[in-house]
Image (cartoon, rainbow, N blue to C red; front, side, top):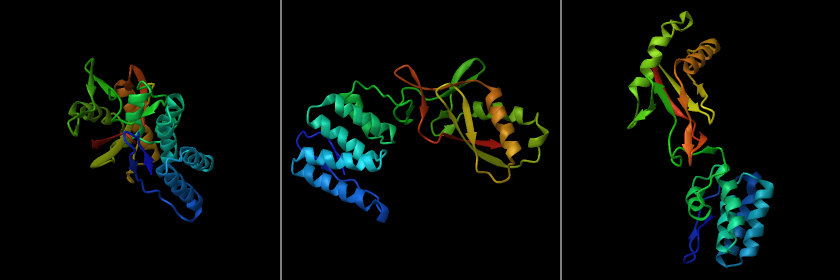
Length: 223
């Protein structure tokens, strides 16, 4: 269950995945939710903290602690927990952080839906978006078609190879692929091509470079 700001008291249930090993956490979550519904906020807080002690990256418990502290008027404490929740992968914390924590995100990694600007690549001296609508910018894939021809090791590759790419907060490009026809050496060559063919600009939020939490952009490469 996730707790939202009480104007008035709102309860939102979140299914907690559990198995035998997580029975204690499930029970603590249930007890915390029940205590919250009964306005026993201190007991609720102790239950959610007990979850975090057992599972430090439990994003539901972290979020609930943040919302609880805000409900109790403790803005600093609430923001601290919400920052931890966001870092743990709770995208829903972002709206509360924007509203109650001056929009400051401490995590260097952010979700793509939250950044001000997505990563870009340079094409003929201009910064370009990787995507145009839901499709990869054709200018981007065009860059690599010329580069592939320079490597004999890539000549046996046929068809379309799907590559995930991401740009870190230093502007470095990283790729990964599950394509079975590529050898390790060929993947290393692709990484080199991505690194040297163009320049990259990282995502930004409030003027600060960010790494994206998402796996990255899927790029089709034709051979």
